[in-house]
Length: 527
Image (cartoon, rainbow, N blue to C red):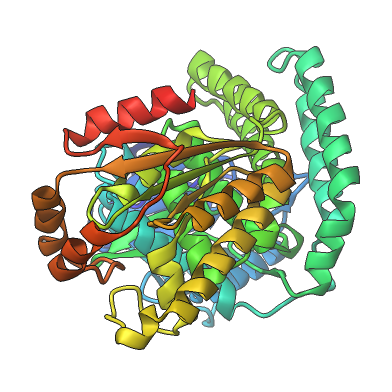
């Protein structure tokens, strides 16, 4: 079954003769629910606040409701036709195999309704988007419920989003601070209009925090708009609008009804997914997505606006949940969910402070696993930015993460360049108000002093963690690595035994133990 965004209700469709039997959309809805309209195949219907989807055989037909909201207008047949055409074009950017075409419901000379192509004889009663049907257990929200979202899948998703944003044309005439202010104003108006659901004090506190963030970030938002970071993105990028097709994360159901909602800062586009993961208690997965996206794009400049973007996205979900409830959604459960989104929107604007953690140690001591483990719990949502020297070295050399570098890739001058860039990026992350975790060997005392100096210059807390493990275990770990950015070999591990490490003042962790115990000790040290 195909599932769609927003709150929804699925049920078997009721049959109808397809003859004139009502006014408005009721006749079309009854027709689409009749198996005879689909060659006798059983029909299932899914309702959302803005559409009805009819599933039959290998096809899904999406009918836009004849509704008008402050942010959406499907009130006439002509507007619904235009929206169907736009939806097809917009979603074929990311899911061409899913979107088949636009289909009309036409009335014949005999008064009966039939499904027809975009053009044909007879009056067009309404219009539909025709899609390929897929199993609902392939949707990312269902995968999340089954705890089937793997690190590899999330990295692949981040890479897909980064490529989509990279390919989208800049739209400097849109976005910017005024566009974000309009989103905020619309959110607050809808939240204030439902005082029985949203506590007035919480809404006003959100209004105050949002206004302050917009004023503070206005220069940055305008700078990013002029620099090309405002693009025609997806606009509704949460887990329910991502599906696994042939093993690949596929984005679908992008916003078509108001271009202004989809033309925005690329970080605002990404923020919907990060917020959705965080709201579901999956911050670690959101942290993976953020870090892989940053590795792919290098767009650290957007981090400062991320708390505001996360808050705006959560407020959007709060008001949409309220709208679904008014359409007959699942009662108190949906109302509670709407209030949770409001709380999430406020919490995003009251984040934990920035801080810097360095994870050092010789090759094979488990630095990368520990860095990934501690990152989600540090700083603003969805956790710390992880800066890994192995990945950065490959990017600076212009090769893929898993391509092995020749000896010159590890020459002293190149290593100095890598560490210098690590410190620069860490400083940029801290300046944006976020936490950073630097994952590098840092074997030399001057390397450790320099990373400590980055934190001191930013005026944030610093913690250094030094990983240690027996030589035999480090050799075994390096030998068994597969598809990793590190080029360390058993021979290198053995040579590192001769390094003069100097005095190590960081917290020492014995990483020759069970990984979960090491992570617990590290978190206790950082608490």
